[in-house]
Amino acid sequence: MDRIISGFSDRGNWYRGNLHSHTTVSDGVLTPEEAVKAFREHGYSFLCISDHNTYTDFRKKFNDEKFIILPGMEASAVLYDQRDTCIKVHHINGILGTQEMQANASKPLFNHMEAYGPFIYHDKWDGLKVAQEMIDDLHAHGCFVTYNHPVWSRVEREEFINLQHIDMLEIFNYNTQNESGTGFDTNCWDSMLRKGMVQNADAADDNHNGGVFDDAFGGYIMVKAEELTQDAIVSAIMNGSYYSSSGPEIYDWEINEDQVNVRCSDVERINLIADGFVGAGITVIAEKGKMINTCSIPIQGTEHYVRLECIDEKGRTAWTNPIFTGR
Image (cartoon, rainbow, N blue to C red):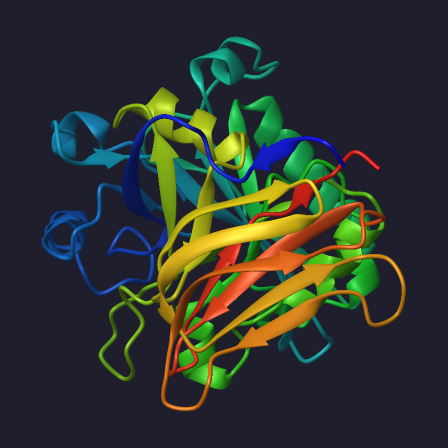
């Protein structure tokens, strides 16, 4: 490899945001006003109020120079058994796309407070088909999509791992991790990547603010964009110019010829994840009692993709999106 591939855009500022949150519009405790106030106070620059099956657009009410709303919702398909017990769900965020995506929408854009679903099934379903139809329809309405918390949703791998045109896979959900230990899903992400699917990921809160356990300000994305506008933020997301985190920061990373370079906040270990032969990838661990915040990791040159995980002493992680080498 004789070129430099950067993980982030060369230009822009960093903006913190949460793409998955709930309010009193559905089953959250905070009103939209209270939610926006809380996220602003915690240093967030953007928020998607993704209430269940109801599209909201609070831009006119809350947008200013320092904070914006990304309109959206969390659409649901639910499978019940014969006893009317919920046994599987697909939860998929539809978030308003760029101006170009809106202009190319084949269906009308959603309106504020427009209902969408839920799509109810009993006894059996074709899980992959159900989710794919939802994804395609949300795209047709001018949205980009995130597939949320697959472990918590109890779906089988074959019901989502071959989905086409997912824009982001939610690999860390702060709510479900604290609720039931079901918040992580990088294994399926790597399975998708190894299939050659160009698949970015995100970390999110999925906050409901019920007070039983902490579910806010613990999962987010950091987007590097030229300005704080709907179009600039979503464009940067679609281009992969961001990282996901539950705590650590990543300032820069790149592939430079035969090595990966990264600069980050103090962490205990850095994992390089790659496809290829069994045992590909490497973990760099700080000396006992010390931290690391920069390193260069050699690669073989045969990898189709690489990604990084920066993990601090508390186990909090920052995840890059993959860089595809073109090999």
